[in-house]
Image (cartoon, rainbow, N blue to C red; front, side, top):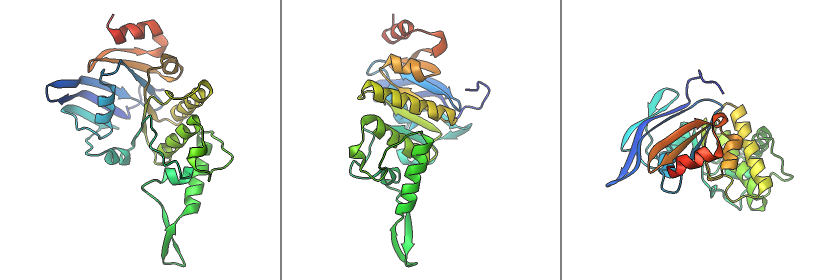
Length: 249
């Protein structure tokens, strides 16, 4: 991680109000290539509002989002995706009955022409994408054409990450990616995040699990009631200090 590199994503003085409720107030952060920034805080701290403002779900009330130095504003999550910001929610939004390749292209299916004129699904392109993307994540399953319902939690997480990587996401927002997983699966996801770092992508990592945060993040930002309660380098803080920031002690 390079302190002098231009940030991929900068958020400055971002606020979001719902009527009289200030869900997020004057929040700023920057994420550089190959950096994982953890967001921590209790429920209602503003984490979800923040990621929804960054990913095009909510328009911010005020403030600015810049991508590679240029101001951006998104009306829809698809617009954010097209610019390289991909959010992986806890439910993963995968189609269980479809293969890895079909999930990678969900909603953007590649077509080819049969007999020169008949449009058909380009299954080879989908299979190649599945194989190449999964190899990039150092992820191996015996049958790439199997429906993803056959896969474990960690494998499904890899498919969701693979989809983001295939579409060249520069910023991946991961919302509680290890919450529903057993320990071996959690380790797999942590190693996937290390792969993303090595590829120079930026990751926003939201988790209640301090163990995972300390295993994978460079910095942690603690939110409390919509404002930044503190920001620390992981190498210079402790679990106890983070917990104190979260509860306001």
